[in-house]
Length: 149
Image (cartoon, rainbow, N blue to C red):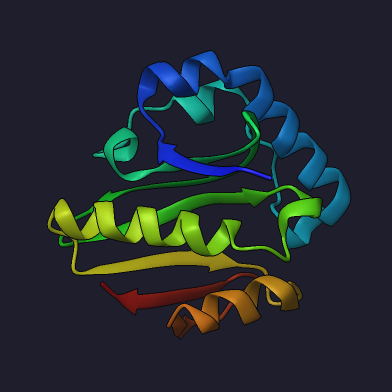
C-alpha cells in the first residue's frame, strides 16, 4: 500500500471531482449525521474560499483517492470545512498525514489556530482530533474544537 498526500490544488480537485463527490456520498451513507448534515457536491468542493486550495490536502492509496481535508483561511486562523477518510483507511496513518499536511500549510500561510466542527456522537472522530491536540471550544448540535498551530 502506497500512501500519498498532496496539496488539493484547484486543478487536481477539478480532475478528481467525481471521486470526491462519491467518497463524500459513501461517508454520508455510512455515518449519517455523525459525518455531516448535508452532502457536498461539485459546488462545495470547487467553492472559492480564502486560501482553500493552498491549505487543503488529498490522500491517495495506490493512486486511488481515499481521503481529503478541506480548510480555509479565517482572519488570523483557519477552519476545517470537511474531512473524509474511506472506511478501510481509518486505522492507518492517513488521517494523521492529512492533518499534518493541512496544519503545516495553514501555519505557512500565517494561521495561528485551526477550528473544526464535529458531531458530539462521533466518538471516533472526537478521539482522533483530541490526539491531534484539539480541545472543545463550544457546544451545540456540533462541537466546535480548536487547536493552536
